[in-house]
Image (cartoon, rainbow over all chains, first blue to last red; front, side):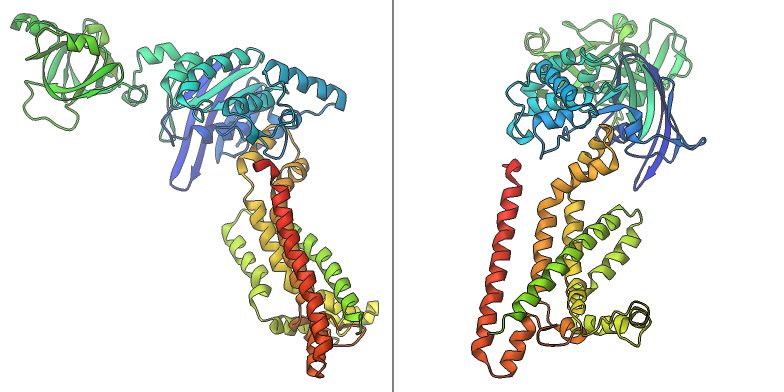
Length: 358
Length: 223
């Protein structure tokens, strides 16, 4: 599947300006709540119209403001799984699944029965949506949107309406069910985990703008832009200045870091993932400290999570701190509880953990 | 007791509700689909006016339109040979004019309360606009639409002021139940008036009871 989107739309207090072009079977759109993800999907589905731009799916032009092309949603052949599933409450499971099929009664019935079986909905055929569980509703909605073989299936926050303990199991289930379907899948989510697990390619959207798109793993490993890094969950980001080809100064943290590899010229920010620091057991002597990116931390507060601690600290040698000076170190509980030097906090930043961001 | 007011009233209210129901639905659908918020507001105001104006004002306005010396009234009389004022059809016109806003407003809010996501979902499932209206919007709006229809019927049945002005109070022709009650009381026949009152109360009760029955029955799938 190939999807090209380049659209602009102005609304009250919000403007959407999204452009990306991706190829692959599983695409993800990642962005915080209210960043314009759902609106982007609606424009692709054709239930909302952009002010200008172009949308092309495979070789089919769905929308082109210059050429005055705007296919109706009915002509686009795109399946859309709504966040709340949008099942028709006055129709039974069977009727919901079959409503979009234009086939003779007999074939329709057969097709619907196939889906009911494949989606393990036997026995629920004549139930109304409010009489079945959230997971079952999701399967009905999924069955309904793939029964007529759309070219593209879009899932809008597919798991956000479910309880946390069901989510992981249902993710696996849904991925399994999606194998029955051969077209492209586009998943929208604010959950990095979900996107990382499901999608090979991603587009990152922030405040109505597409920030970055490309290969999921590549982008997660090297987000390249500080906005993207923030959305991808990088908690430590500092403005920086390039000192030499292999060293940078991080202003907010008051640190000079050796990078071990050439610093890209457009680097303006540095990022370090909260779990990438190495905890040192003993205070290193000065020469080691200098060349190994070691910070003597001043602990601000420690927040206990389920499996780990989040240690908020700043560089102990930094004099005038600002709002961005705090760093977060995420550490497994046993490692933290059993550390030898409880008086001081010495952390090393491994060279390969430094993210260069523009 | 003369039963002609009962028959006239039933005929008038039935004819009026048939017209009001269709007109209300079509106009409500049209207003809901309008893009401009301003146009919606202005239209909504105008369409609701008959509900808040005194019925005699509506009667006056109707006389301006259908009076035999007015363009429309004269046209109808001269070219089609139809005289509206002080005929049975005037009772229907008065009832429609007065009950229309009830139907229109109920239908409009019922349409607007249909979850837009469902309409969008229907579109992405390839359903045509017509299918969407009949299979998604109407069934979901039905309780509200039916409720509006019943209220409009009751209002049409009880119409007095505008009817008196445009249709008069002609026994056996335009004398509906409310007019008959007024006429009997004016003539001092309290006994006869009381019979009519009981009949009106009975019909009204049945109407209200059936509204409740309707709204309960229609919503079985939400339980």
